[in-house]
Length: 151
Image (cartoon, rainbow, N blue to C red):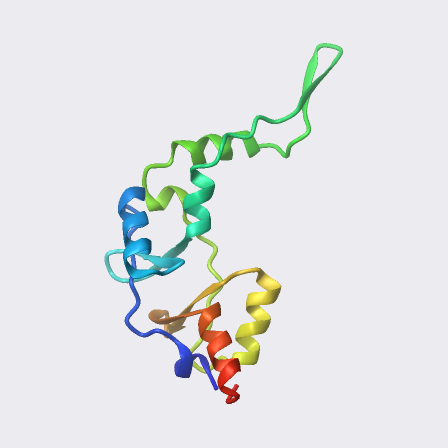
């Protein structure tokens, strides 16, 4: 079996301008865990999941700081606090989506898909053919394929 056999072809998508409230409604109404983010031409910009939405609403993490002589040193990597501030201030999908997206091709095997999901720690994989979004495979699709015995 390949991605073509198990993917959802009618992919629900959002744009970077989609509000977070609208995103929550879409995920809830369609009972999906995430969706690709596309530009006006349908090109893949990123992916956004329930985890991104939940993380956006979590408390702001204040980094640990200690003082040595006249210098203040943080125990976080540089830029982490700025990222946290941006996350809390997010108002649209473009502010919280993952832009480095792991994708697969229609001919990717179920075994390859399972390996990618496991190694990359992702649960949704957009399926691209010639650079165009043609489907999406979620972990539930892989489990369903495995349970059918045809994978």
